[in-house]
Image 1 (tube, rainbow, N blue to C red):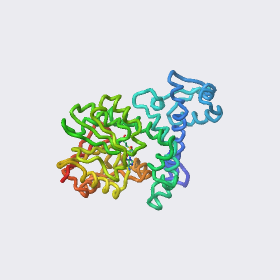
Image 2: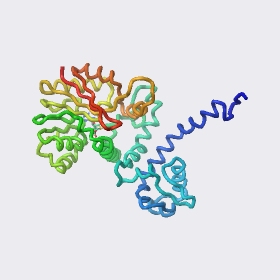
Image 3: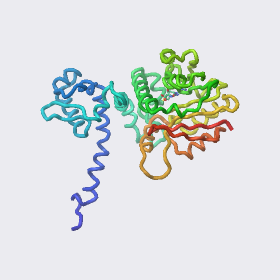
Image 4: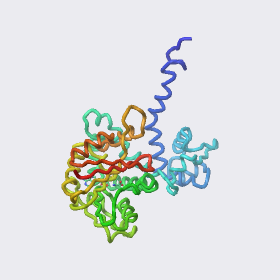
Length: 346
Ligand SMILES: C[S@@+](CC[C@H](N)C(=O)[O-])C[C@H]1O[C@@H](n2cnc3c(N)ncnc32)[C@H](O)[C@@H]1O
């Protein structure tokens, strides 16, 4: 029997449901984000609870909350008890704030200004500008510098993913630093990662540098890790220069935030600032060659929103080589997301 339009056997019948599922992705992401923002998963930590109680505890409209929770039960994040109560599935457990691998800050971040910037993707694709510029009229980091709530949310997201994507997977074990060396963490935020790197390598000195607003609170992080006496903090714009004379320049999740032109300027500046024989060590995801599916290909749209890009191995070779860095070594890690890329001054 030949397929008729709209029947189960027609392409529309077969693929329509799949396309609809993909199109509903924005609603799913937003729904998860709202539940995370409201702290619903923490309220369900001890087991099922009725919507009435959840609405009272979160100060929300009961009928609307019920529909939100029912929608998330339909995609497997929650379990619908059928009597107005809901509980957490294994996926939902990850939205709790107190579990290993918690993704609640990730979820909250995805729903905020980020969602608005993603909504401006059409403008970004048309013009080559970034989603943030299209949505907010200014680049991502300028937006953060002027919006304290957005910055706080971003910091919470970074802290949580630092723990779950980097530290829990021992990515820093693959970062090549030796006793007696000085490492500059460029764009190192409040120093959570550098603090851990220094803690793991007692003979190494550190310099943390990032935009002035981003290093606020770094002293406390370094002190808490017991490494403050081996680490300086320098607030400044990395495109205007980095602290000179170090052996290694560490860039974790930084180069993927910028286009090739900006990265070339940054890496050239670092190359000129480093001690003779110095090196760059970057921690980033690498897009595999070829046409197969890979999470980096979708994640790259997130980088487009802030004005950067995820790169293939040959794109990294070109970028680093163009800035006078070579002998590139790629170190795989236990992380499914991150690779350590080392390049020496040539
Ligand atoms: C994705 S975050 C990564 C932070 C940290 N390295 C990590 O992996 O958690 C990128 C960092 O680059 C910093 N940054 C952005 N523009 C900068 C600039 N012009 N100069 C110095 N740092 C900058 C941001 O403040 C932010 O901390």
